[in-house]
Amino acid sequence: MTFYRSDAFWRSSTQGSDLLLRPWLHDHGSLTGRIVARCEKFSVQPVKNGLARITYDEAAVLGIAPHRLAWSREVFLYADGQPVVFAHSTCAVQHLRGAWRAMAGLGNRSLGSLLFTHPLVSRQPLHFKVLPAHHPLYRRAAAVLAAPPTRLWARRSLFYLNNSPLLVTEVFLPEILRLRA
Image (cartoon, rainbow, N blue to C red; front, side, top):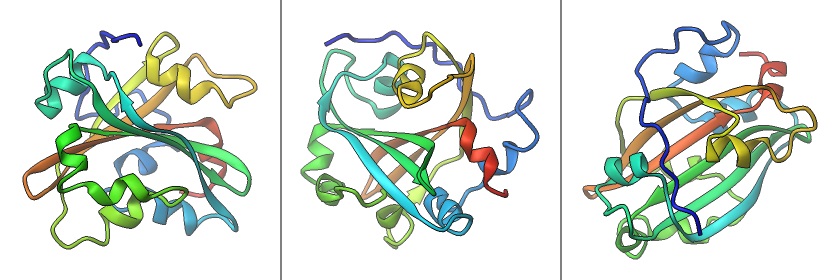
């Protein structure tokens, strides 16, 4: 497995983003709920669920030593048969056995079904980044695109449950713009 050195330049602004994308990037509610409300058929396609090496900046945000494995879940969110979001979630392994243990059994259910219904889950502010084609998350997100763009916008935030952090990153695919914001 490769351990990626991803630049850590996540920011609190979406300056330079497509105006039609901004409402999606800045929404603090459930992204799943927002998509479901704007399509006829919603589905989750799990891609990965298990131990993985994460980027240095993810390790730093989560307080995990860079050389340690973390638990990672990756899924595509589909609206009316089209991929609209690539979601990447990660936490320390000990938290998967503790506070975040319900995540291991999500299968083809969205993580939002847990995060936005659990009364003890809190969310930190959103941060944003333009992912260039060489970024590891871009490469995994673009895998389902016939004609990938040169860059993709992503957002991420930390969620806490019983002082245990979970980092959720959502990469917005071009088809998201076909849904009304």
